[in-house]
Image (cartoon, rainbow, N blue to C red; front, side):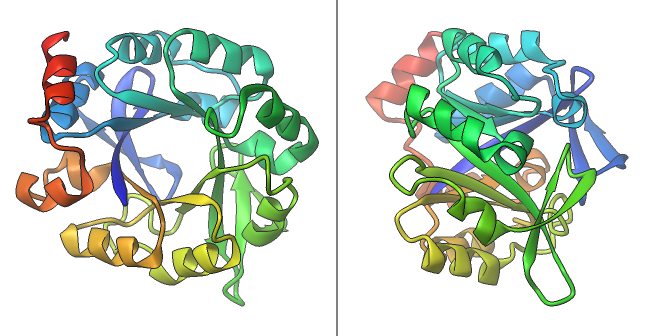
Length: 258
């Protein structure tokens, strides 16, 4: 399992939300480029960047920062938040983004997103579903930066797409996001069991190395973490098994270009 550090951007600043609440925001003084350097130094090969303004309002508001991060070529970057058109996908890929994350539109317009998957290929598109568990424990999808609820379950949302067209799925348990309460292991165990051929990325709640180990045991291929890494709650030694080796020749070469 690969750990993917996350950078959430709002109004040009690095922030974290608590349980997806835009009114419960923690701002960090770190500059996005500074964080990229830190994570690259630890050995990260991928970075997850979210435009929170875009997720809420439907248009990339932090594009200049995203483009600057992608231009470094030090790590591969997947970007989400407000990506709701092929034109935006084209723009991001042309600017050096390696993978584009499609959230609300994947839930609301699966036929159109399927066309994007055909056009760009399953390795360049990651579908993202943010969920809250209902009273019966079923994960229900939320959209528009987590502000709008839907009746569709995570399982039905994924099943709408042709299995030979999708590969990467990012699932965030909103109740765990930014809360440092531990990830929803059972959710990801079910996801892996129901759709074993997909490359699942787990997000929400990671607090320590034990959580990373537990997630790896579910079979997910990736884990996205923001707050625990921002606050350095996991040591570099504990992170190493889940990151590419920062001392490898490829990593050293990439870092030298910064």
